[in-house]
Image (cartoon, rainbow, N blue to C red):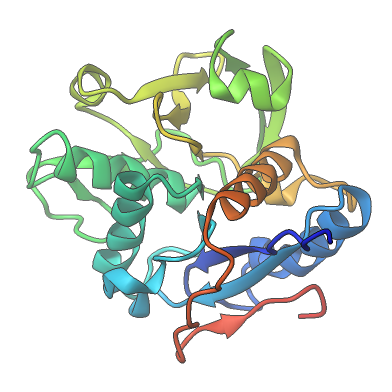
Length: 255
């Protein structure tokens, strides 16, 4: 008798809004992943306030921190990232998710407890994330990918053109983050950091660009890679699904 493989469960962390284009793209991508790639994801939105409970993302097979900052709870987003990082849950952070992945690592791994995000705390003395010199809202740009990196294996390219909708990026302490194990594997043509990953983690990738905005219904390679990592994680976990937090919002292909 052949057993049915478990459906991968993914936590979409952020404050869901019809006004955030990347949020409206999620159902389209879920449907395309199921139909084109046979990767079925059972997706739930976890509001940032609810993510402050460490149990909120435990038991999921992947965590995706989506754009839409400022989040209602910075602490909640950082908690979700920390759980994914420490417990080996496949993780993707895009745009603000990238920014907060760096912030969590700076505070939780590097000991930079006063590191801050200018959008959340503009008067902080130690800003890790600051306004970009040139806003990338609505822009496209070339990203140069380091050979041998996770980002390179995922995209299959050393140069790619990506879409952005952000105005903030990392400004300092990058050497410290690198010394503690974070790899900056993608840069713009001026050397600005655009991709970060954690070698040794099953799948931990963060991009300042927004792969979910890639045109058409074909999911971006980064999104497909997260789905594959989630499926692999699901195949390794016990067959009994964990209980779903009552406050979450299911995000199936239809909505």
